[in-house]
Amino acid sequence: MKILVINAGSSSMKYQLIDMDNEQVIAKGNCERIGNGGMISHKLSDGRSTSYEVPFPTHAEAFAEVLKLLTEGEYKVISDVSEIDAVGHRTVHGGEKFANSVLITEDVLKTIEELSELAPLHNPPGLAAIRASQKVFGKDTPMAAVFDTAFHQTMPPKAYMYGVPYEDYQKYGVRRYGFHGTSHRYVSARLAELTGKKDQKVVTCHLGNGSSIAAVVGGKVLDTSMGLTTNEGLIMGTRSGSVDPGIPSLLAAKEGLNLGDVITLLQKKSGLEGVSGVGSDMRDLHAAEDQGNERAKLAVDMLCYQIKKFIGGYAAAMGGLDAVVFTGGIGENDDVVRERVCDGLEFLGIDFDAEKNKGCRKEACITREGSKAQVWVIPTNEELLIARDTKEIVAGK
Image 1 (cartoon, helix red, strand yellow):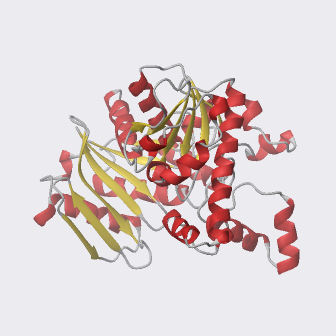
Image 2: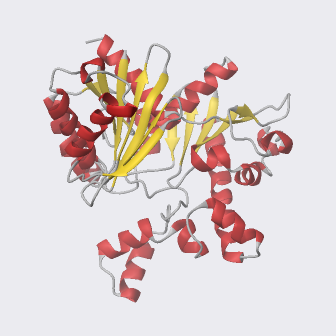
């Protein structure tokens, strides 16, 4: 079975074609600048690649170009689109409606559209990509929606409720939803495979330009750092993370900003970039820090400190700690951040091995033999999990 996985953003659309017989990626790529020009990059499993500019007025044209690359010319990998058995779509927000991945129907699409007010930057382009794929494939090709929020639906009310009037939850769905659920689900399940232990108390740290942390007990989420929106929790690349609710009103008054301006400031001009004045890329921050830039050092220290607090807090909430997992662009590649986070966590049973950690960029345990609580680096693979869910849903039709 061949499954096409689609991950659509407002102006981009990443894709992977996966052969589920061996779970190998046949081809993958990214369509960028949708609605504002157009660029596609495409890579095959044998290493061959191409990239070029092409007009993408909408996601429909991007989708058509992807299928053209897959089926025609020098970089073709299949003879006809009929060889693609199903399509799996990453869908950001499923609200309280979806606790699992589902087969896409008109009712499902209607619900995703209704939930767009909770994710106005994510659900509409995801919906556009689904509509575009249906237009190209026809509605007979089965498609699945895999929700970022679904894995977090096991949180109890004490974890997902905010201290606002209960009526606001009932009327408007004001609650913690959490994000990056596909990544947290993949790495926590992978840890269970690697250790042979399913009933573990684990803190999963998805760290990248957007970051979130989850407390996972026996494969189910107890709590997570992102909330109603993707701005809550840790300091991130350009996002502030959690801040005092009095800050927006103060900034609005002092700077003459409206609500939209303040939200833009907190989401796109804050975080590591706003604190450091250097940028949002950790490699740039480390380089600046090495050159004595105190603001760059402060930004990195803030990130590591906050991650450490979440690990300690979630260990308390779970009543213990068996493992910590680092994943995402920073989590998988930044050994400096991992070491700073784990420094001082010996009281949780972590016997960190600096030598194992140094330069580690692959799946590995980076604590010493006999460590009561283990620390792992596990590269995430959201696309594979989406493909697995899609295969299971199609098989169960």
